[in-house]
Length: 86
Image (cartoon, rainbow, N blue to C red; front, side):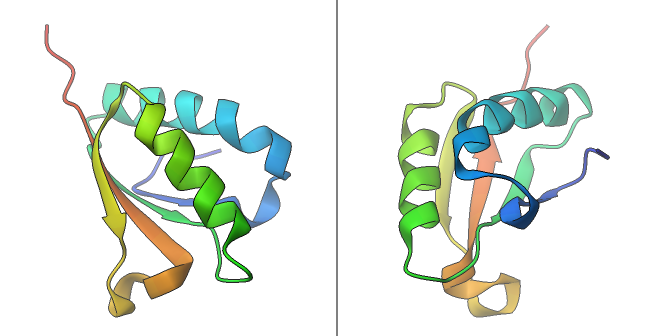
């Protein structure tokens, strides 16, 4: 999987999301990517709530917010990662 500033969760099972976010964010930080858009889809909001709950607890996450309409709106979350200090 290429490490980019967008992570689309549509191809993953819900039980894979927690580990995926940790691994993906670590890889992003190593690659110098500190802003990531997570596309979780709109649906009933179940995956969005799960993702945002995981983001709240993740020590690599500086902040997160709902994406604006042009970046996915209700179906995406923007995440700012903490920079890696040497």
